[in-house]
Image 1 (cartoon, rainbow, N blue to C red):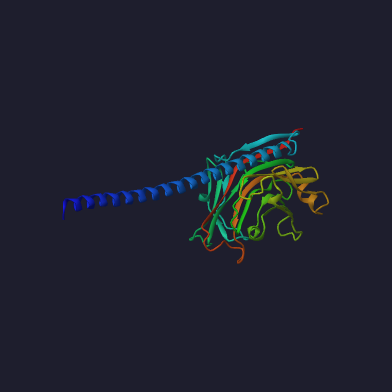
Image 2 (cartoon, helix red, strand yellow):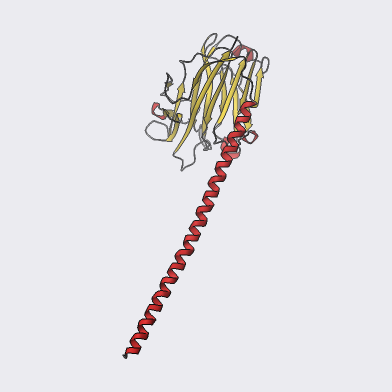
Length: 305
């Protein structure tokens, strides 16, 4: 090979190397631009999400401003439920679901009271959950209560973030006030929750309930935090969610109203998550492992007179 041929080969090799490097740089630049576009899109999405959350909070604040006036009510209990101030954690099974209550599934912590529902074997039922009773809180015959809650939306969950049972008084085992609950089938075809009143268990009188669609709330997301409220006054029990009126029952409607709710009872609050029913289709999906209900605030009032 002559010197000229060697020089030309050297130059040609350098050119090919430069072209390869150039091609690699172009590929890297194109990838960087694509990554930047994705990052920019992600930032935009994140900003949009934050704006939506801010708007939702502003709407909730406005609803609270327009919610029933608390004039005439005196606060007697308030807790963010980050600490256990005397609640009873049940260890039992109930006849109308397919889970077992375990104390370990009710956890007081920074987020409030978190009740876990789990697919868990070894307890004679396929699922475990929790049931928490506030028998240390004596609620008078007439009262107002509010609970801030995030409910699980997985199929076959049956959360009741706040309900009341009699603590003392005539026929103290009779009656139930459900401030909010979703039934095991609520998430299959609709996004609803319900409120309900019950007479004496086993009396055959039948309970009354009313469903309400989340789409009618300022924030229609069922998985968001919502404030569920009840007011029990003479001859009347009314329910709200996020300041939106839900339902009223009163003396004469149902017929047994006064015999249960106008006999001078005191009440106590209860927080429960049940799972499943008496069989298909009221069972969680096959791949379901865990759900949780979060209670971050509970306020109870008595008449201020």
